[in-house]
Length: 358
Image 1 (cartoon, rainbow, N blue to C red):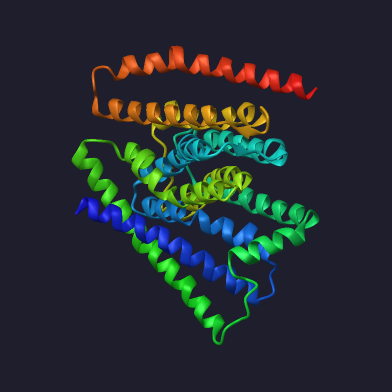
Image 2 (cartoon, rainbow, N blue to C red):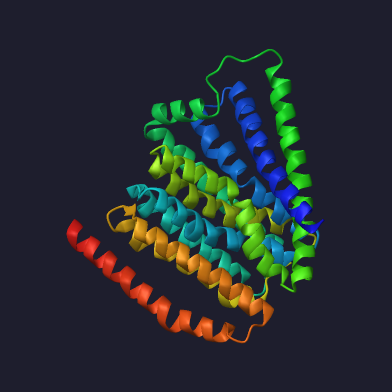
């Protein structure tokens, strides 16, 4: 039954997010909102709906480790797992705006969240700060994007979500029904997934934090994985990278912000998460800068490196959580050798790219 809950929860979450986004996008279009604004607001929030539903449900149930692990683990998986797999399909193009604006914002959001969680909890005030930041970020995106190539972006979003099709009879009721159905699916799916995850953690002897960082994080990132890989296959390789960076920003500011706001009490942040998982998330975000900057693309070998680190990270979590005797040795090898070598490699790559561009 545990696996039934997990699978049913994931299916309902993905389906709920898709139905919610399409219904809300078409409903907003009926009120005269431009496709561009819809894409940057309704669609952006909608693609983070699975993470939001799970973290909010977990915080309401008092499972703070799952709420935190879901967001932190999703951000790590988005870069290392999803960008790694997508880059293996095809080298990914990175726009200059991502390097100059969005990646620094992602790094800043990671540092701010880490700072707010440093006292071992995320309070309602912390949640209000994070959610206010995502509102400001979204408004900035809408205003800046409307100044640049608004017509092309309007056409792109309109085609993607069928906003340019003639309205059908009773379209308003149908779209409102889709929004309601999507919300119901998200609530039910998040319930199933959280219950299944807690049961799985107990059955395997793993902590709720580890389950949140791995099983739930990857599960709620499935929409991003599908979107990025399909974009790479279609040749829209810049969309794949932008999708991941934007998702990471929304996960930190919107998902954790909302979860902290609605939680009956402050969400506890474990010492393990503060000592290891948050720093890994920040390091992954910072590592994006030199890789993205070098030639404005993610090469296949860099994608393979991302994947290798995700496997190593997951393996370390499982070994540590189950108390395996060689977990400490594995961790020392990663921290003492693999990470410094990677850091030196990234610095060399960034220095060469900077020299070439000068």
